[in-house]
Structure formats: structure tokens, C-alpha cells
Length: 487
Ligand code: FRU
Image 1 (tube, rainbow, N blue to C red):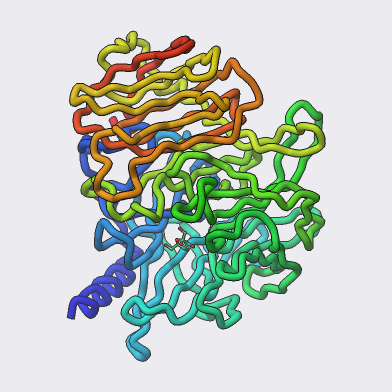
Image 2 (image 1 turned 90 degrees about the vertical axis):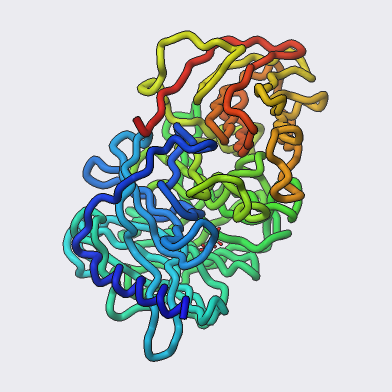
């Protein structure tokens, strides 16, 4: 009965999807509500989907459960922004739908949005075309995953599913997460997606977004301790080398600390329009915190800007936030640095100067989001965030020159037995380490040495106020209070 009602609600929502009013939004002032990171007003979210820039608007679609605050009924939520900082949540864009004849239901899993400037698909010039994984299930038992299309001709406000879906089907239960981009030199669309359990990325091409031809596969590389998900392929500038670029294939899978958690890895190499090749198939990780997953970059934007999902499948459904669960990272601009012939990813948050508040920070009594610049002049140095309730988070560098975040004493840690943890990164190239730190109500993001290492972590203090206390050879250089993006 419950399923029938949910299915009926889904049908009604879909039928009404042409007349959409902005949703009444919550006050965004709940305990733990991120103030400088986007999160939906209510309910569950996971991966960012369909990131695209179009006519002055950034679109963030996201895996979303319209009916609850844990994973289920996956649909695409939607938010738009003019500056990548302030967001307006819009009604659900594409919703799970039932098939009355088979009893199946199709969830809208992760995918991509492109702008079809030349009307290659026939939905109209400049139509937004979403390519997503149609996850067919019966009472949550997966039957098949294939790739489908929906399109919008009103700037993403309303969506129509293509009548001849699916557009790519290899009859597998696990086959998902298409990312599509326009490949200018070949005048064609390129799709990357994964066969998760075979640790394989497949590359397809198309001229009309509807018929896809397999070009090549990439696998047998990197970390294969956990299934592969959410791949992306993009070209990045190499810093300090005028005009030089390299291709990056990034994907989600195991965490650097092992397969108890999920994380992201990347490969650098070349893409000739058909095949991605790398001279170095070793695993390199994007973020060493526990809460950065499923990141993809924006389409139709010159800069390569990535959002990750701030959570981890290991405890994601249990984090103590309400009435929402899940948030997105700060937008990170990506580039590469060459180091002795190998290429390392550089990640920098976009500039948040427009939301800096000029009033001085009282480091003994912080209450709200802050941005800090901290220099660590020796190993075993850092800062501690100490709350009025005695909860603590340590951010610093250990004796092996690794960036670390320790949240073992961070208040509410016992909602899941693996949440309390100490994360460490690969060793930093050098000391002193310059840390660029963002502390939001329940999210910390740290960028060391101008983007060499990134770490994103959630924490849940029992009280909101805390002091920032340097230790070892740490210098608190600058601190800004940041204004809430919701007010
Ligand atoms: C990654 C993922 C994707 C899938 C989506 C379902 O977090 O498992 O592979 O499309 O989430 O919500």
C-alpha cells in the first residue's frame, strides 16, 4: 500500500511538473545546517548531478529523495545560482516513476546535463539535455540499469522524458553514471560511464545524444578495492606552462585509508577523441578527508569547477542532521602541476570574498562560518577547535608532514561506530605548510599549500560556539567571518 501511494504521488508530481511554484524553504538555521555550503531544505541528497552553466546560471542537480531523509526514491533535485555561492532550490526536476504494467519503478540515478546548441538531438536549439542512469527496480530489487534522456527547453525548470528511452542498454544490473561533454576537435558528444563491479570506465561517442557507439575502455588501474562510480573526463591547464594541458579521468571508489569508506581517485594522461591513456596507472586520491565523494565538473564552463558530495556511504544515512541529510562541498577550481614528469591535481576553493564579514573574529568565541589562513612552521603543529561543551577537532600536520584532521573527540561521534576517526593525507611536499581552512557549522574543508592537498570532513559538536587554539609552531595569520549564504 505504501509503495502504491508513493508511486501515485510520483505520478501526480510528474503530471504537475509543468506548473511549478518555488518551494517554501526552511529557515536554514537548524543546528548543523551548513551556512556556506549548499544543502537541500529537507530530505536526503547524495551525488551532484548535471552540473552545467547556461545563460548566466549555474545549475546544480542532485540525487534526491523527495519522500524522506534517507536514501530512496532517487530523483533529481535542482538548485540554481548566479555566483556559485548563493543558491535557490527549485522543485524536483526529474522524478522516479512507476510502470503500471510491469510493476517496475525507475529511479533517476546520477548523470549529466549538456546544452545542445546545434539541436543535434532534435529537442530544440539550446535545449538542456539530461543523460541519466535509469535504474529499474521492483520493490527496491534492482533489475537493470541503462542510460536515458530527458530534456528541458525552459532553462531547466521543467523536464520531459524522451519517449524512446533508454538510449544505451547493455543489459546489466550495474552500468551507470554517464558524464557527457562536447568534444570540439571531433565534433561529437563523448560519454564516460562505469561498469562498477568490473572496475571499468567505458567511453562512447554520439552525434545526436541518442545513438551511442562504444569507442574504448579504461581499467586495470588504480584502486580497485571498492566498485567504481561517477567518472568524469576533462582537460586541465598545467600551471606555469603557457598553453599546456593534460586530460584527467577522475572517479569515485575506495578511500585512501581502505575499503571501509568511499573516496575519489584520478588519473592524468591523454585523450585522443577515442581513448584515454595514462603512463602511470597508480592510484592518486582527490581528497584525504572522509567526506568528499561523487565529484564531477561543470559542463559548458571554461574553468573546471567541481562539487563533491560531503558525506560517506559508510555512515551517510545516520548523520545527526534534520530535516535534511547531505550537502555539497565548496566549488573547487581544478588545475595540474607538473612535478618531475608527473602531474598532480591542484584544488582551490573559489574566492569567497563577497561573503566575508569585516568585523573582527574573536578566536576565543567563534559562532558561525569562518575562513582562516594558518601557517604551520614545524611538524606537530596546528589548531584545535574547542567547543563550550568540551568537544574538540584538531587540524594540523603530524610528524610525517601529513595534513591531519582528528574528529575522534568531536562531540556526537557515536551514531555510527566508524565515524570517529583521524584522517591523514599523503606527505606534504614541504614545511612550512600554509593552510586555507573553512569551518562551517558541520563541515571543515582544508586546502594545504595552495591546493596541493585537500581534506573535507563533517563534525557535529554538541554546542555551536567554539574557540580556535593554535598549538606547536602554528601562526593564525588571517581570519574572516563569513556571512550565511541563506540570509
Ligand atoms: C554514487 C551512486 C551512483 C548512483 C547514485 C544512486 O554515490 O551510488 O553510482 O548513480 O549514487 O543514488
